[in-house]
Image 1 (cartoon, rainbow, N blue to C red):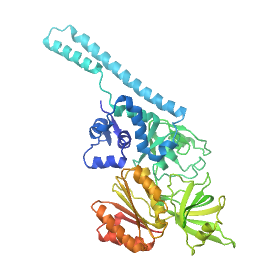
Image 2: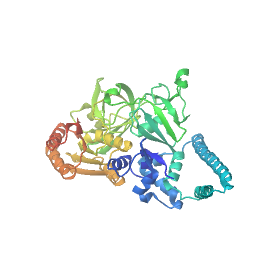
Image 3: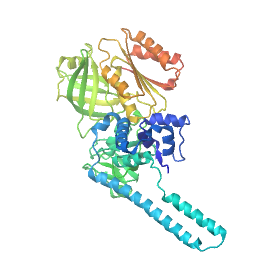
Image 4: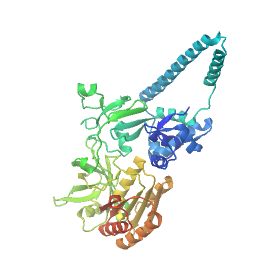
Length: 487
């Protein structure tokens, strides 16, 4: 008998991205139930390769987890023994309920058979024969649905969380807290310290159970506890399915301005004229920002004057303690001069103000096209990692123009994405002039993408952004599908 699973779980079971599965639903190849679920029978019909031999089931589950969670899988452990025990207990209870139901059904049928056994009327005899045939069918061994078995295994290894009222979903793996898992999934959750002190990540548990996995100092009131409130930063999902009620940020306007004193972890040469600045926030004061946003950095100058510079964050909000920035050599920028002169060293304090800007990912079912020029790759990288975490885009294309010799300072990362992800394509180009390079890039996009309804994200120097944006507008791309950031 088929089971009904959520779209999120269905994508895990057959090893495709949620965006791909949602596209099949929009195309009519896969039907949803009234409550938005997918039949495992329909999944097997659409993805027959999922019908595997039982001996290969464990290998299949491992491969599905690899494909579904990408680079994060190998970094995860199994849930704690306590959480595993709770999930296994829930599965056992579910099985026991089914068994009791079948026993009651069997007893009822047996009682009915005894009632009609002594009847002489032909109709009673026919009824008895129907009962016998029905019992035989119920007791017969049916073929096991591989996806059902895999779903049961995934319920033990991971938990699915649904947020209300947004309907967003994410998976909790290993020993992640609810907050860590939600941020890794790219959700705009409300939080502050991340260590149980401020209470900003408070949510209400509507269905399912949670387990405390970290110490927290914030004390919920009696009324809050009675209503089912808990802290996402200190708890994980104890049941395989969990429903939480919380408000999420709708956009940059919902992210409060912050001032944080960070510490330099490392300054790394990515190329002769490009440096990676790695800052780390205190454990009790993390930077809340959206992918694609910028911050202002401040360091103490040699003459006692502070040096400031605004740079986009190149890292993903899912790791809010470790902030990465790509800084190009620029003799006219005091901050860049200090970085390249070696006066910014590990352990040095750097003040961060922000976040700034509205260059963030819009919720859309359309394919994503990113275009960057030189260090404009920084906000684009953050957006790409955010899009991969959301797992909702049917495809991602990256065009990266270099106007200086080391302009493709993260080319290996781009190639790794392209090799690891079927729905990811990258095109690296070079031109000494940003305007001419933008025109050539528009021509390449037109050849590959203009027959597709896409969202375009452009980042780089003003000459590049303005030229490419004008080219896209002239080709008929609506303004609502063009997002620009001058870096």
